[in-house]
Image 1 (spheres, one colour):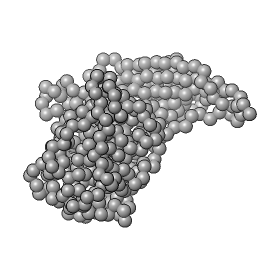
Image 2 (image 1 turned 30 degrees about the vertical axis):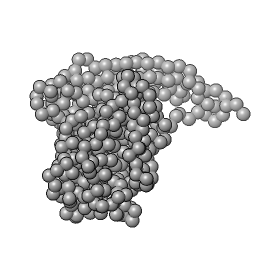
Image 3 (image 1 turned 135 degrees about the vertical axis):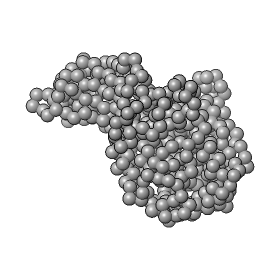
Image 4 (image 1 turned 90 degrees about the horizontal axis):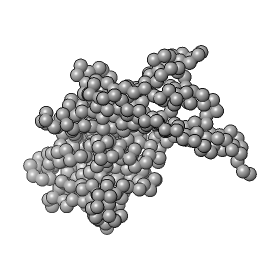
Length: 440
């Protein structure tokens, strides 16, 4: 992919760092195929822990600790892809396995961490708040029922924007780091845990699957992002443009299987037999919260939106609703960003009062600035997209529906000094349909 980007910079052609034989990243759940790579990884990490040069594990920790926009931004995916490829080349050199490929851990398929990650003196040396008995998927799902919609999300929802995390980072990646905790719970220490590399290989696999399935159109400004600061077996690696590594094959690897879960891929409404739904109207609303900086932020859904949805007895309306929360970085790391919807006036006639609905919860896996001066000026943004639970709450309730954003502890406890919510905003688009006969 080449051309002039929106910023005016010249995009380079796709690089080809691939060896003649493409490396295949395999699932750790299948030791018969990934066993040799696991052994090579064990050998290399043991070596890297004993070194004090550029090939040390401490160097990898420092690279990840230095904030260069690798979290909370669309740089997340290409930055970590480049880091994984660089680490992979170091492991290959130190282990002597020329075709080494990072094995990946798919927590949805294998929700319990393998016991060898704890029993082995190399893999078990890292601190973790999880054990081999911990169901990581259940712990993650207990917080949040979204990941990325792998076969449906558009680019800015999936990957984010220059100042906002995308869904694959905020809901899939972050919460696994929080569920494991220990070294994995902090950007400054996560690469010390071998599980970091296997988790991120799976995140990269999600991107690869989405890329192959959706044939996305990447914004030129994203393609022009410079990804730099990594080392390989022979020293510093040259910078690359994000647009040069959007295809994993450019870095010489592939995956044994694509990501199998189309998680939360919603289906369009069903029409009556012999009928089809044809779009007939669109109405839009944008609702920002008042000036932020408080412990919580609230917005009330437009009354006309509620009236239309509650009167939709034939199911001819679809709601496309999305928004953004922005927070200050002071004290944010390790907290959970939560958004709930509630109907304070209770249920509609004959229906019980609906309980508040959690619309999102995202573990704040962020870099906190070390000096207070920058803490007060830097922000963290997270985007969200509503799903059927909001429509269900609207349909079963009466009166206003209110969205409330706040931060809580990882165990759902209230915080004495929560990080301030700087902004909460949401846009709503109501798409109307009419039923037409299906031509024979």
